[in-house]
Length: 218
Image (cartoon, rainbow, N blue to C red):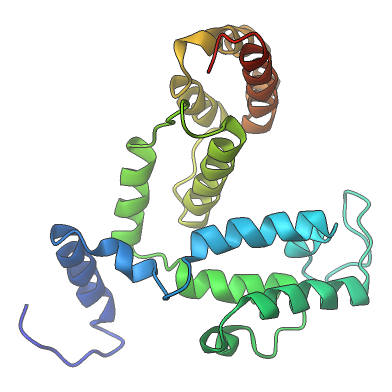
């Protein structure tokens, strides 16, 4: 592609070309690299940090009601604590994306919009990641893999590449080693209402811990 002047009407087509070019040169990963850490790994750390501080519910809080459906009650000081944790974890170059955000959800939405853009090339990349997903169970703990799986599902949903929960359950089960087939049979033989990723993940963790304890899965 010859040099062009980027404008609103041609940015998307240029972006598709540029990402494809970087993929060809095996340089696409640098699009996510900010010199310290990438957004995905930071997001996993930040969510875990908020869970530790019992602030994770604020990621879904849009300020529309005083109390959420799960009984969660908004507290301004806790919201500010969460914003403080977020701000302290960012380099100054990222402040522009969260400046003026009064809710942690707004700040996260702003960062996600910047670091997880959704275009045609992004959807293709997500689908490729989904279809080539695998679990190196000898080196990666199950809970770590499940965290990565859930995050990929989140990104697929955000890109409107969602599918039935039962399909995702089947995808997850196909990635398990043969030693864990009992869970597959339990899920398949259960009622459709139990064919969800959270329920499947819970059963997988239970079986995984048992197999490790018995020395069957090492």
